[in-house]
Each structure stands twice: as C-alpha cells, then as structure tokens.
Image (tube, rainbow, N blue to C red; front, side):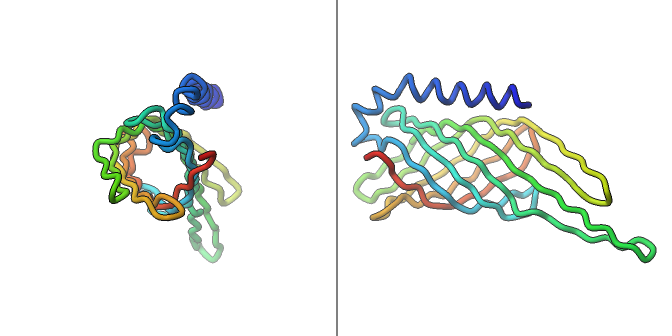
Length: 180
C-alpha cells in the first residue's frame, strides 16, 4: 500500500512539474493553484468528515485535484452480560482526480466540471482489545461546480468510488488562490 501511495504521489508531482511552465504562461486565465477545505459526507461510512484539497490548472479546460478526507470517528458501545465494550472505527481517504470543465460562465463566475480519478481509502476498527484495518483502491467518477466569490471559490462535488469501498461522497467547501 505504501508503494502504491508513493507511486501516485510521484505521478502527481511529475505531472505538476511537466506542466509548470505552461501554467505560468496561462496562470491569469486558468487560475493557477488553489488550496481549499470543506465538509463531506460518505454514504458507506455514514459519517460527516473534513476535507483539505489542492488544485493545479494544467490548461484552460483541465486541472488536477488532490484531496484528503478524514471522517469523524464512529463510536459504539455494546453491553454483553453486564460488561460493555466500545468499538471505534476511523475512515480516511485520499483522492487524485482529473477535472474537465464542460461549462464556464466567466461573467457569473460559475463553472461545472466532470471528474475521474483514483481513490485510496482506509478503515481501522479498535475495540475490545482488538485492532483491525483494511485499505481499498477504487476509481472515482463524478461532477462538481464552482462559484467565484470575492475572496474564494465556493465548490460542491459529488463522486462515486467504484471498486473500492463503493460509496457516494458529497462535499462542499471553499478554495483559495495562491501565487496569483
């Protein structure tokens, strides 16, 4: 799993460096680099979570997004014949997605995009003196939108993880431009 994560990170960094000079030439029209934070909800986890992300504009219509999501821990207490056991489950995910802008209205500051990419998710369960964890790799497909505010971009995204934990993820948040 560590090798796969390292491989994905290397690909992301390579794509960023290869396209860095092109992005510098078109930074004012494409948006450059943005970082953001927001909230999310996963249908399989059934918990809200926090998300941080970053976007890198490759050209006018395509960008790369990486995000890390951490869901709130789920604690459940079970009573068995007079004794109780608390079980805590933690879930996190890392996503690398490509975004293709299929709608842009620069006057209104509204954009919509399709997304596809890779999802790496990990769940761990602790309780009763036992620990277990599992990791899955899946493919994301989905769509999202952004609305330009005076100080940031408001975003909303919906994506489905195919082949991993197979969950629908809904997220909202703000992205801020850096380096413009």
